[in-house]
Length: 102
Image 1 (cartoon, helix red, strand yellow):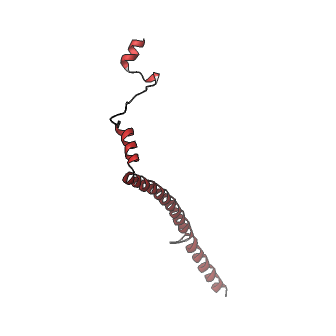
Image 2 (tube, one colour; image 1 turned 90 degrees about the horizontal axis):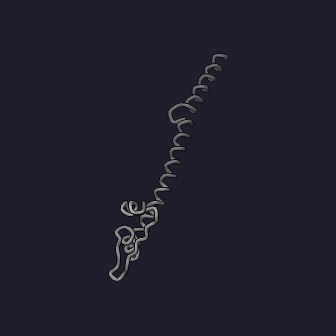
Image 3 (cartoon, rainbow, N blue to C red; image 1 turned 180 degrees about the vertical axis):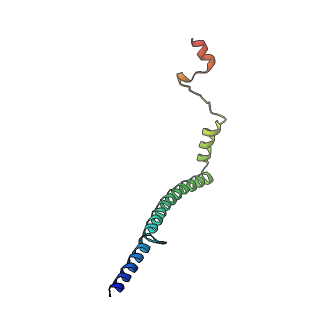
């Protein structure tokens, strides 16, 4: 009877080891769960970024105001009847003006 009990304890210990540390055990399960959670968070951020890009695309397709604003900011677009004034801060004087001031 003692031999039978010893064999059962050894089998139980081996099964517990497999459950906790073996292939597809609880340790690996926790690692995979954390990896899935991180990936889902990354996917959510990318979905939000994609939604913003889709909104910008829709604005560009439908509204001329957005296109005009981008042209003014990025390309320096000026309408034919407009006058453009460029105001520079005092610290941003050109090299010729800086030499005159000294």
